[in-house]
Amino acid sequence: MAGPVARFSRRSQVKAASGLAGVAFGAACGAPGAATQKPALSDAPVTIQLYKRSTMAEADLAAMLKDWNALHPTWKVEVVQNKSNLEALAPHLAGGDKIDVLGWYQTVRGLIANTGAPRLLEDYVRRDKYPVDRFSAKEIDLVGKSADGKLYSLYYAWGGNISATFYNRSLFKQAGVPEPPTDWNKAWTWDEFRDVLRRLTVKSGGVTTQVGINGYGAPITSPLVHSDAKWISDDWKKIDATSNELLTTLERWADTIVKDGTVLTSPGVNVGITNAEQAFMAGKVAMHTVGSGPAAPAKKFTEAGMDWGFAPSPKMKYASPDLQSNLVMLIKLGANPDHGWELTKHLIENNRWGSAEGRIPAISADATTWAREIFKSNPNARPDVVADGVKFARTVDKIKYHPLGDANEMYRILEPVLADIHAGKATVRASIPPLQGQLQAIVDRSPPF
Image (cartoon, rainbow, N blue to C red):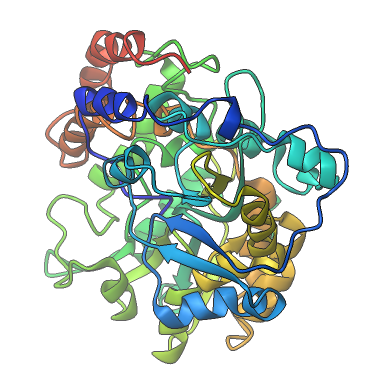
């Protein structure tokens, strides 16, 4: 997934931010100077601190840093893992840890608002003529820039709530369902998608023994990549929980769960296995969406002897995966920012960091080469579907990245309501519009960013 939901109160946010007030985040340790030439860095021993939100196995860390250690044997990288949210990270920032590089999942807007810790990258980019245009401009604007448009972060790979959709070719054949398109421009319409899921759902004696799909990413945001629906306006200031576009989009996924009963989590469905990945491998689920990186589950499916392939996401108004970037930035507390910048560039190139986590490359031009290599052990995988998804990916709704959205109060309001809707206990049009006032009040008192 793009990242675990951080759960902390508004009070703890203020406390974390105020705890950083005494840290020297001023000009002395702010953006680098307006250097026009790249300084020659000494080979003298230094330790570069890399903090990251998720945990990787030692073997994967070694693979990620293998080239770096060969090129720079005196520049040691010290990795601190499992700093998964602001609650876990804030004590290290407040304590003055010399964090040079941070791997993160929320926007720099939120991190700046809550900590002031990110270091400006613009002088580095300008000095090195670093080609930022290789990244998605919309994604960089959403996650990597401050409110005034300055660049504070790049991203090293794609994660998300639906980075890929697997399908079981054998179950498709048994149901007489044609295989999914390979061209995103010819993706199923949403109605076609629902019809396919119905045909892939099997009942025997009134008991559901197989369903069409395991689920569809994150219920608050994933359906929205298919339409122009928005929880939050482009200027981050207004909630619209009453728009017909939003309600219709949420309704279409809710109907798939409740009315069609074609989802592993549909009311009354019990195929004997609750774990989505295991249910897919057991032939109880015909299609399986994943967040994070698709490489690790693909390896499991191939080793289990499954005949699987990748399918493009369906289309309401747009066909799009739910991809979200994994950020990498410099932190003002770092003792070695120039070395940190070199490490950042190194880990992005050749998808070194992303590959170690099984993720899709940050740079779109690398995606096809990566996908064909990673999935070559399964000649029927259709890897270009995953690679091409990067080109079609639409940015996630801003509620995911609002300081009080995914991290706290808005999600706490929306999650139980949507759970009731998907359990058949409530409806979208009766339950969502009344939340307008509560959600707007939260936005109105959130920190400016």
